[in-house]
Image 1 (cartoon, helix red, strand yellow):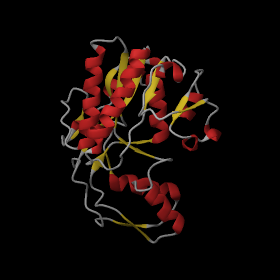
Image 2: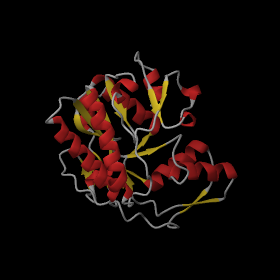
Image 3: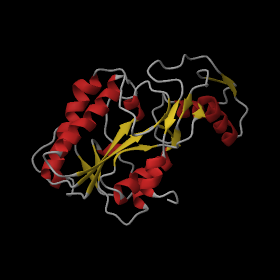
Image 4: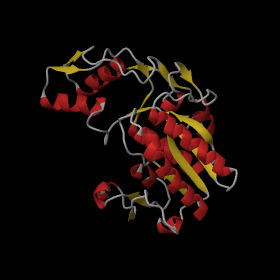
Length: 266
């Protein structure tokens, strides 16, 4: 995200819990070291009175079924965002999740009713609703960027992409995975960052908007693509892991609102 922001003529401030969370070689952005779990008076000024806040923070992943998401994380993140808005923040972009759609299958648009079926999706959807109620009492713009599946640098080591890269680097003969027949919507993290920054800078107040590829791709096809990019012959041991029970078999995002908002030539 910092790399994507650096491509624009904007002043960026990074808020991190510890200095170790920030990789200085990636950006010259000034850093505020602060745990947002403890919002205080003047917190808006503390981080430089920004025109736009891009909110990416969320603990407890990838354990999507943990009650932590609505027992701890939801009230913590809402308290911080409310304090920012009360302090004078005019525009907010929050990253949501495709899990807000729950177990619905097929092409999912922003017009689909949110039916979250796991604690993480429920907590994110509840935060969106809380902020919409807050908008009725305090004027501010909000874009709710509903993210689908991402892969790339910085992912948790338990995710598919880093596991595949590590297997290739070790020279493993095979790679254990699920059946791979599930259809998903994937974006490389660099493209996701570019789209988020464009929304934050140019299109405040877009409401709920899918940030996605818009095209279904099987997990198997994605891993085959990585094989080709790495020019390797590693065998895919499909069916080794069961498919997750907290997500549908086939779903992807409707990208029409995103393209109409930003322009298809972006």
